[in-house]
Length: 153
Image 1 (cartoon, rainbow, N blue to C red):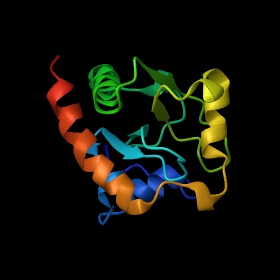
Image 2 (tube, rainbow, N blue to C red; image 1 turned 120 degrees about the vertical axis):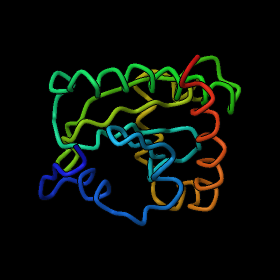
Image 3 (cartoon, rainbow, N blue to C red; image 1 turned 120 degrees about the horizontal axis):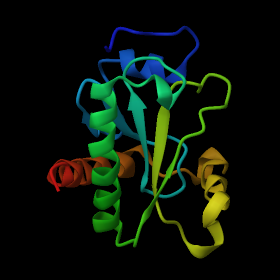
């Protein structure tokens, strides 16, 4: 499945990179890869990236759907446990140019001023406000263990 690739697709390019840092390889079962958003202003913005290029959740295979069905609650529980939030948001849009590839955002509930659709303001901030790569890598290692622990809950 990992062989499908579309030119100009950010997710396909990252999926093909064998030297991804910890923040971009939190989990990988060969169908889905979990990364932390690169442009986050706080930890807890996970992205579940399908390994093959499709643009609709309706195009998932049965196996990809089963894996996704286990991974979403596991990622949500992991964020809730790690960050002490009561829930995580789950969003699929894939509308930006270069980002049509199926990728699903699983985001720890933000502070009140960023709740609901305002959550996207947290990834529209200048790069000077982004969480450092070192902090994202450290978080990735902690959350990876928690996701693994919750996959069979």
